[in-house]
Length: 504
Image (cartoon, rainbow, N blue to C red):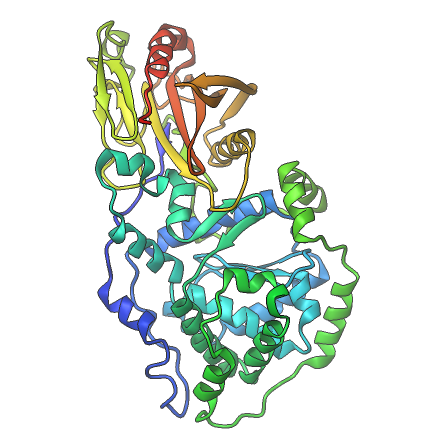
């Protein structure tokens, strides 16, 4: 099994200045220009990877209209109009999708995937208002807010070392990286969380995008004012996008000095699109949550032809938590005696747990927080994959979200399958007790990074065990060996699992 590479997150001090003073440099210019978005500690490739991993999860957790639907085609044309005003050096591979949900909401993921609810289309009074919502979301991507959040979360964490790697935000693989970036996995799909300063900056930058696209930026303030008027029963949008305060007044102050323009309305096209949207079967948030629990959306989306397709720039391992390795001919056949576990076991204290393991196997701490911890024989590991041994990590559900262990385990299995490497479950998840806690056990097959004795690719057995911990944490353990040799390793793996001790 091959884990996803992670990059270290570092504090970017200059980015904090931009966040704390979102309007500085905007209100005094006559012709508004998009600001330099600054740098994030997360690379461009990593942001694109995370965004499209999250987007693939949306297609599993929520209904999505196919790209060929009139509503999606309209939103895509509108989105492309907005994208054209962004300087190429600061742009991203934006995509535009529509969710048939009644509530008003929209969100854009790192790297560019954007989702707009049907309820947002029908709630807008004109195209400029709808474009204002999309420009606001586009501004979050432009300013790399999620990536900058990830950097701040990483540097302000008080957990470190091996304990931090397993439990510190409990960020394992892609799901952990998404959580670091403020993207939460729950029964209602993917949820973005921004600070008020992020929201103020997205308003400011979004207004510039709107203005340069030929729309009246006042429409953004008008739409947000309309939503705020709904009071405590306001839309889902505000639960994910906290109001920075005096939103309408701030936008009006920002745009007051801008040169007047003859703004386009495109009302005739918008009215047709809005009427079409009113005829779409839409679901409530509660219905979508129930459908997610029943795993019905992936099947429905597939039947409807709503299939997520990352762009060429997003050369990623789609939505994978642990990317299974494929035999690339780099590893040589390995003698079994070099990897067989010793009969003598030793105990390692990893902080949030203790575990016994063969004394000839090493505990290999992650180089960066969020990566997997491994216990394996040195000869059983290639440069970037584990062919013999144990991989462990975990994830943490969003506060207030509820997913059963069966659902979380199913998500993990799906993510591993989506990541490539021909991972195939062997049977269903079965109950298992782990250190007195509730667990699930799933056997899977994939391709080993090590060829067999004759140099041919061979199948691998991957035994996945998940276990619940307090505060929404789920730990997962992946025991690995070639299929033909797995039974020789199983007694040691079972002994390791039964030795687990969690602190009170």
